[in-house]
Structure formats: C-alpha cells, structure tokens
Length: 402
Image (cartoon, rainbow, N blue to C red; front, top):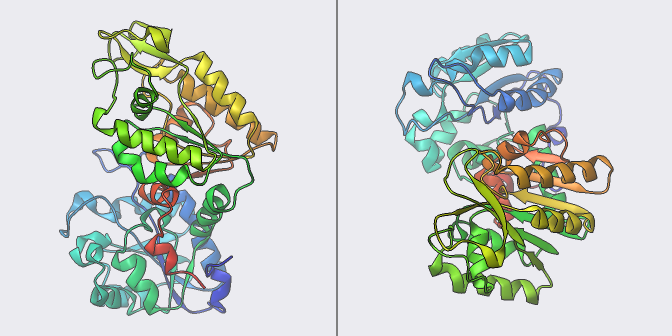
C-alpha cells in the first residue's frame, strides 16, 4: 500500500496515540445515539492500538457548532455507546487542548481510553490552523487517522496535525481507501457506475470524471430526466420531471465525451409516473413516448429499465454506485432501486462482481433494499466518497502517503 499504516509506526508500547475518528453519529432529541455504525467501525483500530501497548486519545468533530461550545454538540453524549462497543472504560475531557487534556493523559490507565471534546468547538479546526494543530498534538507521540469521511476537508486535525507527528492510517481508513481504489482506480473490467441524484448541476465533476473511467454508466434519479431530454425524449418537460433546461447542452457534451471514451451511457427505457408525490400514490408505468405532458410526475423507472440495467451489469466485473434510481423513500417507488440492488448483491455473493457503494442516500437505499451487508464494500463517507469518485485528491489521504 502506498500509504502509511499502523504497522509502519514501529513500537507503540507506552506511546500516546491520537486517533482522529469520525464519531459524528445521529442522535435523537434526548441525546440517544440512533445509529452507532461509526462508533462500531472505529473499535478495531482502537483495539489494535491498545494491543500494541499504546495510550489512546480519541478526537472527533460532531455536528455544526460553528466554533462555540454547547451541550447539544458535545461528544459527552456518546461516552456510554463507545464504552459498550469497546468493552473498556472511556474517560471524557470537556476540551480537546490544554492542561486538562495533558493531566488526563498522564492519569490514563491501561484499561481506559480517553475521549476529548468536539474539535469544532474551536473555529481554528475548520480553518486548518497550524497553531491549533500544534496544541492538539502537543501531549501525544503519534497520530493515526480513521476519519476518511472528513478526508476531503483540510481541517487542522486532518492535515496539519498529521504533519507534526509520525502519522498513519487506521484500519478503517486503510480499508476505505483500498476498497475505493479497487472500485475506481484499479478495477477489474468491465466497470459499471450507477449515478443518481436530483440535479445534473450538482454532479458535473463526477459525471465528467466517470465517463473517462468507466465502461458503462447508468444515469438515474432526477438527473436522468435532463439526459433523456438531451437525447431527444420530448415527452420529458418541466411539468412532469426534474429536467434542467439550462443543462441540456452540458448533458449533450457529457454524452459526446462518453462516446469518445467508449463509455456506454444507459438511460431509462420506461418510467413510473404518479399523480401525487406521496407513498402509494396512484401510479402507472409508461413507455417514454407515452409520458403524460402534465398532471403526473416521474418517480421511478419501470421493468424494462430494470431488466436492461441488470443485463448490462451481468457483463461487468466491478460496480460503483452513488445515488438511487427513483424516489426510494416512498413505496412503491423504491422498486427499481431494490431490484437492481438485489441483483448486484446476488452477483457479489456468487463472486461475479465487486460492488462498492457510498453516499448518504445510497447507504439508506441499500439498507431499504436489505442488501447493506451484501456488497463488497459500503462507504460511510458522503462528501469524501463523492470527491474520490470525482477524481479529486483528498487532503486527509494525501498527507498519509509514504
């Protein structure tokens, strides 16, 4: 691997290791964690560091406090969940720099882990301030990053801190980078990508990168409506779809680039239209030439589209997925996403396809389809996953290169 890992750090016995984690978990109004996935995925790295005799100090961001301390965004709320996941006592300090932290590190016992307060209680964190980073790493010997989901931000704890101490990737970060590299940078081919989203304008960089890298590109969700219009489907309009008329020429340029790079673009062959935007609304499946001009909205794709996508998928060795095919949050408009996800999961279990997926909506959609544990790898990162797919270098990853 071209990045530094924990094994590259040498003897850690007695060393104080700062672990930059992502513990930005969802909570209800009573400060109870509603999904502990990010906590659980941090545990293996903490246990590995502990097994090597290190004193572990965990730091993370949480919420959007904008440089002000408040109980709503305090990491103190996750102490019990972290303790339960680790099976160790977690000592909490209500600051992330200064004497309190230094004192707590000195008092830390072998069977304990230290958790510091929210990094974003300081504006200097998001500014990437070097002096703040110096204060952060002052009491530690080694830096380890497991926060891939924040790797697209050049924050103080992600970049500046990593330059000030011997630094390496944690197990989760290494797993994430390795999986994404196999998915996009060095994949088994043919390579297919499924990209959804409501607007073409929000995923221009992604589409422009993918048409030069993948063999087959499925464009889905609302953004497909613009490409359908650009490819001559005149029944798509601003009354029945999310078409962006000001992006038609851009869509045509992307299709030209795809053709020049021998990338096959796969668009809907039929659509599911509904009378209202609500679950179980009156709906019907229509061919493209029969899309009603108004009074109905495009909310999913039909069986012809599903069959085409799955048939093209059968020809591939790798699938990268970002974005659902329809309005998966409402039944029955999750049908296409579910069926395509199930087919991808089957091919994965038969060792015929490597499947990598990521992005908030995508993770939710795959969970809704019941296949969240059946893909090769599902990234918990949102923005970082997207920027990786866009072909951008992530500051928090680059800084950990050998």
